[in-house]
Amino acid sequence: MTELAISRRIRATPFTNRVEAAGVKGYTVYNHMLLPASFGDIEAECAHLKQHVQVWDVAAERQVEIFGPDAEKMVQLMTPRDLSKAKIDQCFYLPLIDERGGMLNDPVATKLAPDRFWISIADSDVLYWAKGLAYGFRFEVEIFEPDVSPLAIQGPKSDELAARVFGDAVRDIRFFRGKWLTFEGTDMFVARSGYSKQGGFEVYVNDTALGEPLWDALFAAGEDLNVRAGGPNLIERIEGGLLSYGNDMTRQNTPYECDLGRFCDPWHSIGCVGRDAMIRMESDGPQRLIRGLRIHGERVPACRTAWAIISDGGEQVGQVTSAVWSPEFDTNVAIAMIDRGYWEPGRTLWVEAPDHMRPAEVTTLPFEKPDV
Ligand code: THG
Image (tube, rainbow, N blue to C red):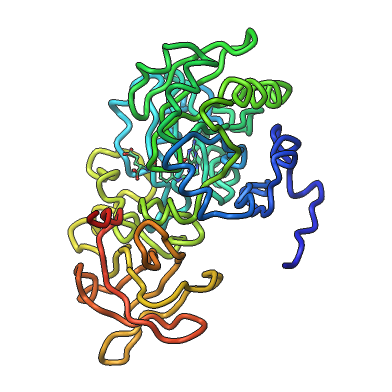
């Protein structure tokens, strides 16, 4: 394996020392920051995540803070989701789009106050786009990256572990809502959210100096729960149909192609820069769509480039953007962008994997649990 040359440009997180001590084996780079990708065996990590509880250094989900009298207008400018009914301490999965409706990011945003939002971004430089828009529109807002680093607690024992450190109040937090809870005298925003389908929380650690103490407190409290260090798991996220910006979609794709139409309401997202494009695209319908694929045969190699999807007639009708072997589903699971006319579930297509052509079956996302 080639090594990643780590320097100041590839930023460490408040938790990096602990992640290293826990034996991290592979990093990816996300928002110019280290994001743990593997501790040596992603299949074992996936099985553990589904049974126990993990603590994830997801500090690379950087916050873009929008603060000031025009904050709400500013966020609505960037998304076709209707924010007019947003409540304080509510989180939103938000497609961010450009003037043509091209996807720029798919963050989780939190409304902390009428004049204050955190946009918890996927891997693209939202801060510059936001600053450019604010300048151009003469909005009265400050836009900056605060010292806030998400630490995720994920897995079926998350409630128990989070309650031991933050108190029983965590148990009453609803999905995509949050509460300010105290750790060592500092209030932190704790939301029920996270990049897995196993349930859990994200703690928005708002002081780098508290990163290691919080990590240590979680591991001390969770010993009997079999708590382990983990990270966004490639297998679990494909099974669960969680999209990865830059992998499964780019600026070339619209929210409708990404099957994120349920998070869009162009008629009511007054001011959104891509609103006209979205209204047109909503009535036309997409020309291609994100789907799952079961790729038959033995385990696929790592998906480092898009793999062509070929029809029985021999034409390219899509591409595979993420793929991995799933022990639970006993097949390769994949996320793919498939052309209109070829995306109905159950259809068989061909995948040009780097080793050889493989038959594959189109499915809806998330993947449905195999019958036991
Ligand atoms: N948490 C936070 N920030 C993030 C992520 C996160 N930033 C980057 C990245 N993840 C953004 N991408 C996603 C993708 C999916 C979801 C969250 C962030 C997600 N989706 C739910 C689902 O598909 O089941 C639906 C959410 C809803 O119903 O509103 O959670 O994970 N802080």
